[in-house]
Image 1 (tube, rainbow, N blue to C red):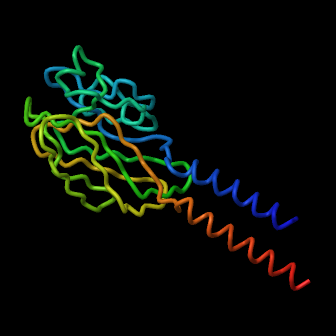
Image 2: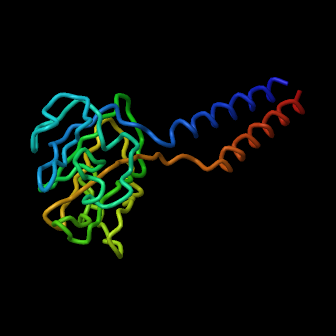
Image 3: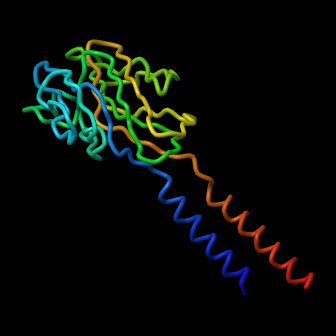
Length: 206
């Protein structure tokens, strides 16, 4: 009976770990604020220190539009009218430092970019640099916003640096998400089956 209870406890723990570890959330991010063009492309909702209504102001210790779960549904010239839209836009190559209070594993980084196909100087970036590793960005066909995914990041730690490398005058991003590499459910099933066999063998020895 104790082996059954042990297996059940491990199964519950594994299921909890699988759900909780899949999408780690940063506690804050630091960066330079966005720029002004036809409109203001600032991180208006940023909760930390720094001027949220100043071009390229240093922002630190907070969270804002890049992690609020709001993903732009259209290009900047639609969603940013009349300002305070979901995008943050830069005329430089911004580096965002995401901070996790506890050591965190990140295998995948997803970034939602605008791709106005050059309209207003806004295009998909040419690359994303994650903690010194460069991931080329393929400009998708058309001009719709898109998700870029960097897999196999292999990061473990507290501070994860992400840099957007522009392909044009502007780069626009509306959301950044993270995911862990976690074992498939089948892996847990095999592990539990192994524990059960060990339990059976132990009981037979007795």
